[in-house]
Image (cartoon, rainbow, N blue to C red; front, side, top):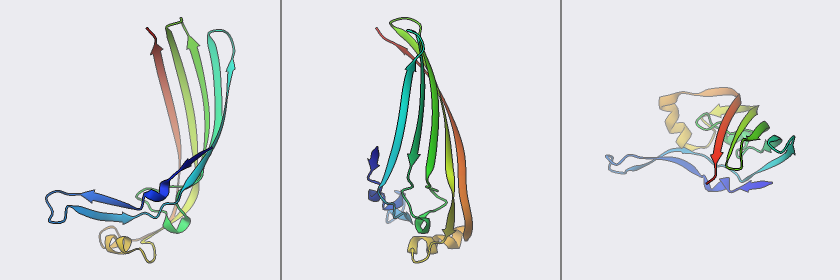
Length: 146
C-alpha cells in the first residue's frame, strides 16, 4: 500500500525567463492525496528460472470535477508478469510486461469557477467528453555483478 502526497501539486506553471513576470500560471490542478494497492508473487521454477506476477490498483488523484486533458489522471488497474533467468552467479536477465487499464472518466474544460481554465479557453476552446487509455509496458534488464 502506497500513499502519495499529490495535494502538494496545486498548479502547473511555466517559467519563461524573457517575460517581465517569468513564472506564469498555466493551470490550477487541485489534486488530492491518493493510494496505490499492489500485490505480487514470485515463483522459482528452477535454480536459474523465476516467474513473477502482480496486480495493482491506482486511485485517481483528481475528482471528476478537477480532471483536465493536460494531465488526464484517472483510476488504473495494472497487470504485470515477468521472467528471470540467472545464467551464472554474476549474470542474469529479467523480462517484464505490464498492461495498464485506465477507467473511462469524464472531462469538462473549462472547469466551472477555475480562473486559469477560463482564460486558457480563449486559446484552446472548450471540451466536454471522456478520456481513457490503455498502456502496454515492456522491459528488459541485464545485471552483471562483479
